[in-house]
Length: 435
Image (cartoon, rainbow, N blue to C red; front, side, top):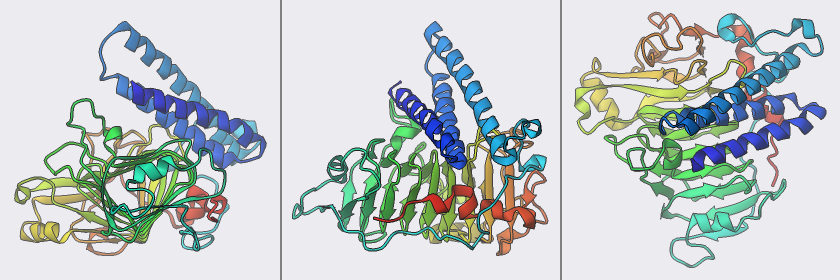
């Protein structure tokens, strides 16, 4: 219940923020924020299904269902306004790439235009170290020291080399918080919460969970050590709009990286897991990242089906999805030994549809042989197969052969690839990268 109330408060804030954004002509912000509001409303409704069968729960679910419908309608109108302007006669119900609808693009092409990256010259405001020789010994204490609603200025937390065993939350009011470590494997924030524990949901398993907008991190490992025989166990979760992580490592098994909502950018990162280990309903771009599939269970030699992604778009008007640009999809050394010994039982896929309008694309990526020739995995029967969009373009490597791909995946038309550029998909030109 506490998580639902938090999510609904985020929904209220994002919805209220759209009013001023519309008057300033920030239609992309409006679409991003209304998409996020819908994420929070849907997740709250979905969570209540598992509470109990009381009248109060049923009434609350009915209210949320109505709220979801109103938000969906408003978002649909914003999509039409963005693409067709004041020509209301051209407005239509939302459609997707599968229907032949492609969002209007105006920004630079894939591989061109503004390049998002970690700003140089940032100076730390506070430092965290394990040996007690600096002001803070825990990351959470340093986060708590950050001013609320700090404006455009970054609050930089330098986290010295060490293993920090703690659960860290960057709350909504802590904006523009920056973590800088000493490198992958050197600065490590680690936890072990998992959804098999009493009273713990997937959302709350995150070792590090970020909500405040403008979050940035560099040279850090985020880890969840819950083993492959446990349930969902998140290493990092983000609901931070305009969040950027560069040269970071995410280690886990099932549900390693929860890109929950809003606009996110991952650059030169290393992401490791096995079951749906990159999931959520954000608009996220992964550029120049190394994606590693790890052994799945305690006796991994018996085989498994792994899915790299489980994108969860619930409405065709949401501006959400996962975009992989110039990434490498392969396995850990341990997994590759298992795969090469018996490739028929070790099957890995680019993704599977967590929700009806799941959207994931791979562009210019290197797909190693461990990617099954089907490419993509159903969730359950034909669920979502007619409404999802799974696209590929100009990938390389033995796993990129599309001759045996499932018929419900697509080749992205060359004339529409630029819809998924950093500039167009997450509005790179609007990101404030200065200190």
